[in-house]
Length: 75
Image 1 (tube, rainbow, N blue to C red):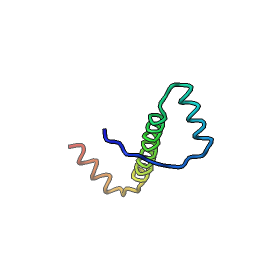
Image 2 (cartoon, rainbow, N blue to C red):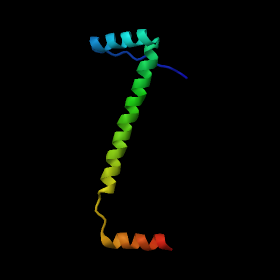
Image 3 (cartoon, one colour):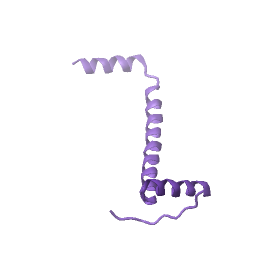
Image 4 (cartoon, rainbow, N blue to C red):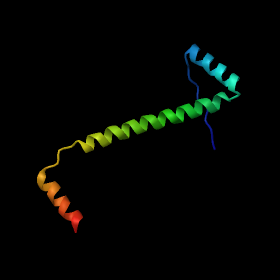
């Protein structure tokens, strides 16, 4: 897998906590950060999908459209 360097500034308390956890558990910082970032991106996308589904599900459907759709599915 190709990689790309990413530089960012993080709060000192967060970097210290990362150092401590990685040292204590024998983990690589890169792995922890990559995993956390992938999970956060997935959560954000899931949240956006949920909002979209809710907008679609709560839309008003007129009775004629619902009735026609019901007839199509019965056949």
